[in-house]
Image (cartoon, rainbow, N blue to C red; front, side, top):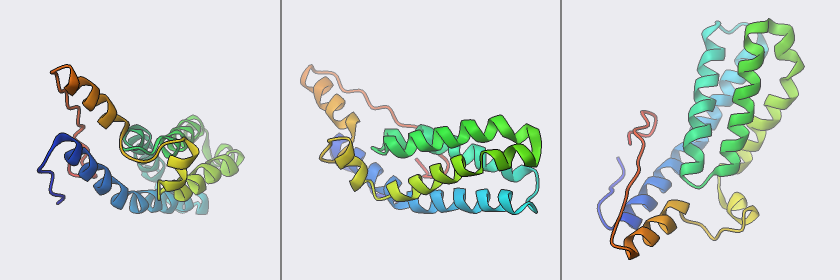
Length: 151
């Protein structure tokens, strides 16, 4: 487990680094589930599991500085949820769209390209907000209990 002692900025940085370490595995899991759906032999729950994983990444990735990855996860999630009830033929029609989103998520796992593309030098957007609030005498921490990260 990641040590989260220290200042609020150090705690947030530790959480971001922990998330970034887990991210390649989570994206790889999305790739595995997507490939299983495309192969056609996967149980029906595979689509639901993939949608859930994409949804989690769509929500959590931007909180940890991976907003472009989160947007790709959201796009893939919405597309998948739209076609899942309509069967294999509908899934095939969006194959390229979802595959492209997941490939882009894989590319963005490192975060450095994304930070440069968005004009950031690194760190969490929440650190700036926390510092701003701290200068006014108020500090607010918002953390999500994500079972995948343990936080």
